[in-house]
Image (cartoon, rainbow, N blue to C red):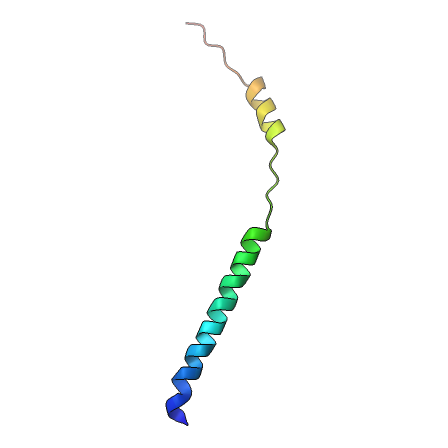
Length: 53
């Protein structure tokens, strides 16, 4: 019946919205950035500036 068509549109919209959110959340939490703290600390130690006032 045509009167029930918006209800199926709503369920499809909810399904694809939830699928998109789940996909985005999984991609966000599966990414592990590589932190290279030792190299950044070495560059800070090497680039010290001694001011002579």
